[in-house]
Amino acid sequence: MIDRNIVKFALYGFLKNLKFFEPFFYLYLLSIGLNYFQIGMILSVREISTYLFEIPTGVIADVWGRKRSILLCFVLYSVSFTVYYTAHTFWALIPASMIFGLGEAFRLGTHKAIVFDYLDDKAMKHLRTRVYGFTRAVAQLGLALSAIGAGAIVIWTSNYRAGFIFSIIPYFLAFGLVLTYPRSTHETSVIHRGQLWRRLKKHTIDSLTQLRRAKDLRLLLINSTLYDGAFKAGKDYIQPMIQAFVLGTVAAANQGASTTGNDNADTLLISAFYVVIYLLSAVSAQKAYVFKNLFSGPARPLNILFLLNAAAYCAIAIFADRSLPLLLACFISLFLLMNVRRPILLDYLTEYIDPAQRATMLSIESQLQSLAIILLAPAMGLVADRFSIGVMFLVLSGILALLYAFFLRFR
Image: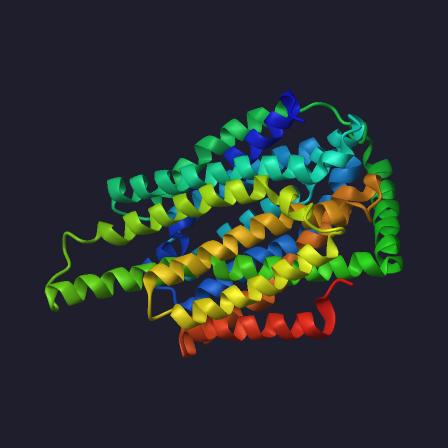
């Protein structure tokens, strides 16, 4: 199954996930005075930028060149990290989020298309679930290493923002790695501007026509959108929840005395949590094909995983203020379910997509996810501010369960 280029694809994910700021991103935003609603707005701005450019950049990748689009995204990411590092207010974070979202637009869907094109070229399409599970597993190892590095950076520098600068280093290495990618049969050479715009227009019309005619494809995209959008908007609330538990425990132990000297307890626990969660996610992604093979088709495992996900959100609401070990177990289950489900869904999804339009269609999926986050993130933040994080997850669980019952179930 594995050859040199598949290893390169996996190493790309490893380097791309070395975001040393991410395990403490919410705490960084809280430390500069933002509330949960403003944090939701920062996420929403990022996703609006991705949403506006997702389909155009997917079309550009299909017509102009997928490898070129990936190279450009790393340049945009590095600029964004620099702006994040220098920002100190809510309004200064807006351009950083917009640039990051633009980088996401050039990347999302495009790299998956490169991988699937390569498997088609090598007559390995029957291994899509297994290969994608392998590359995703290696990418999760990158997240585990980033959690270790993030914790070390925060303890060393005593602030959350230094992780942005350190994240530029692996992205520079990833840029060099992508330069060595093989040329795909779908990759195009540089074309003149007039011809480019004519091809962009035709390609967009063809892709939207395919989407309009394929009812099953629309259901797949919407199901994926809500599942992944809810996960991305809610997964990092574990950071303030862990910090609240740790600070509450320390305050109780000291009976209200100063907590100086215990400042690193939450940092170490958050870092350790992300290391464990990403190592387990790597195993679950790699073994996704095993779970898929337990069933005769993809519909039933995708339905089961969707319902388990809604149940996990409900469990988080129950244990939010009661038990830290059980709360951590619930969040771990969210990540495991996500990493089992994603390779299965992508394999199912690519069956409905014309290979020539693969980057565009996967970009449409990513764009719809962005739309879900644009709507969900501020709303979730507002509920968390007005009531509590537990109530927020209970509402989210109920919404997903209702949508599944009436609309989102695969038949």
